[in-house]
Length: 86
Figure (cartoon, rainbow, N blue to C red):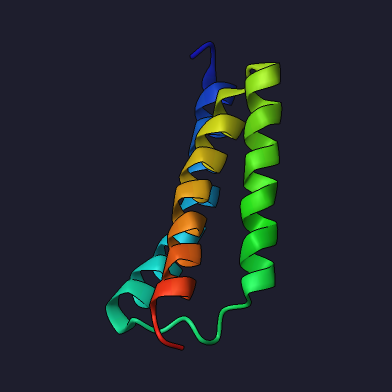
């Protein structure tokens, strides 16, 4: 890391990425995802993949980190959506 700006970038990236943790945890515990929009989940998943490609192409670590974490969490919600009875 080159400077405090990089630290801020990674910290902001981490905070953005964990926004889906509570939803994934709740869905896993309750085995309920009926209120989640599959369309919204698929849009978020697609956007994270696009951002990962962008981050890799530009070499922007915080963008890669944030979206890699988010893609795993959103993929979990997609899995839950098709696995759990709504």
